[in-house]
Image (cartoon, rainbow, N blue to C red):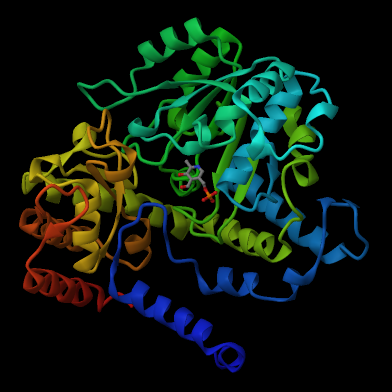
Length: 452
Ligand code: PLP
């Protein structure tokens, strides 16, 4: 840090403060983790200086011999880890991985024409009619993905994201009675809508998904089955999700991030069946900017770490902890979407406390508990204020916290939520006795002290 400080002390201070904050607060954001020193060091070095557009052995730049080693070792570990026929490790993030996959699926299905008319246009300036013209050029392909309020991701076909503009989109949700995917309704919707792509996977769904069943549905309507396992890749890698619940043998194409439950560097990857590999390989420069060799090096380290037996123990413990957290909340009367969890996350319905997700999120943060607000199925408060709080156990499990600590954390969360009251007429402002926030914050730090 002294080297960084000699150039810009504010950056050195922010880095140091980030370490302190991550050490002292309860990191319950379901998509975050603590990468190992080996991952961090593989990422912070001279590989960062190298340009390497193209793929292994076929680069647009000279001198890529070391990057070739890095990329092929990362792909080799990814294939072995997940049992996938093909791995593409260049995507810079999960969203980029999804874009590569969508482009590969489209290009595999239709001859995408070059439309000169759009050549000089800014994509954000296109009118709805022009987007419709573009979609028509792509053969009006349709995408069926999980709805945002049921736990889907923006890239699964929503309007503010390009996926909602490339495709005609429809969503599937959850059964209101169980909070779980209704596969019969999904089949009916697929038969009626006839999508080219069905997307499985989620950001905020607390249950496991039957990917074998989803593949049957995709086959019945002739759709390509894509799974975005960004959130639960660590549970697949660690052998928690097997058989029908492991997406790899069932999907045509699987995308992931590498930094969530998988515990690697920030980044993405695509795994696919051999018939899609050549289209996926065109990801850079079709969709992506030049690969980040230092991040691919860190991905290789993370994949190699996840192949070790201790990673399976870790992945099992993530779910054990998540279920202990859910039980601790349920026994204190907190309402959970779907009534529990099968994976790394728990979705609290904070509506019964008379507050919004936004108020709950800030009240918890003021008390040293870092979570995020999240929509719940049919959320009356919409996607901004929401009625839910999403909590996840990958990060705290990395630090070694176990079932007993999860029960204590459930108690702290309940204490804060029960003490929070909405400010008159506001969905964002609230009242929380500062003494309670301070006490909980201190208890959180004490809880974490044995797990540095
Ligand atoms: N896919 C899913 C299911 C996600 O939950 C997320 C991130 O939250 C992403 C993709 C995007 O990942 P990134 O932020 O790396 O682009």
